[in-house]
Length: 335
Ligand code: KG4
Ligand code: ZN
Image (cartoon, rainbow, N blue to C red; front, side, top):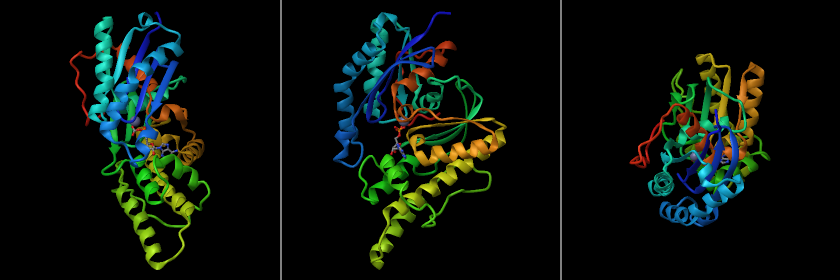
């Protein structure tokens, strides 16, 4: 069978990204134009600014991607793009661009669910394959998913309030770490004592694979307010490390329990928070202890990127699951 090359685009939030993926796993090029600098001044992503920036960047990012892959558009077999979930204006930029290219070039088009993209980042530059349990932890989502086969998903649990990355970002903000908070909190926590403060861990009902982080976030804010009122000194590194421990204990505990229940011998991580050093370390430790295979994508494939969309699209391509050219953006799309 000849090689299948997919040009894939992701503009779901604040990164304009495109990639060329060969046979679902080989990354020929993956270009990411980050908007962090643009949104930093506002302490978070401003949707209208994100859309405008995507429009300005998309042509340049695609041209750069083809250049890095050393390919012409004629060598591309299919165009793919994220159609949800995400910010509607941001999604529309990449989606419309991909659909227009597919129409003009007379090539098939595949719309990809962004969460499915994150899960599929585990296929990039690996031979990792289903079945496995995947913990998807990003700024917008926290899902525990059983992947029985390519494209076959059973959602075991999800967050009932904040996403894990959202909790990281909010706690980082109250600690005065700025935006984006997750990676900065990760760094600071490495210098702190994770047992210094006992923050609540929301394991929820027995056997539940759902998550909840808003109570923990409030507990951190209350702790800081109390210290301020009592005029007691705060050690930000200890707060960061203790908060992080409360998050990771729950994430790792539930993922391991799900793998046991499903009889899955493999675990995968995905999403921006999967690049968190403490989460990676703890998961590695636990999986080694229980003799479970663990796959964690490279950091660059954890945060939003086009490559993961190309990986997901390839397995749809193989199944002939092409999308209608009228496919619209779905900001609240579920897995
Ligand atoms: O997957 P992603 O790029 O975007 C979404 O689809 O949401 O994830 C971004 C999230 C942000 O909340 C960011 O703070 C968090 O991932 N993040 C981290 C780390 N790197 C990124 N959180 C904790 N530790 C990190 N090292
Ligand atoms: Zn994402």
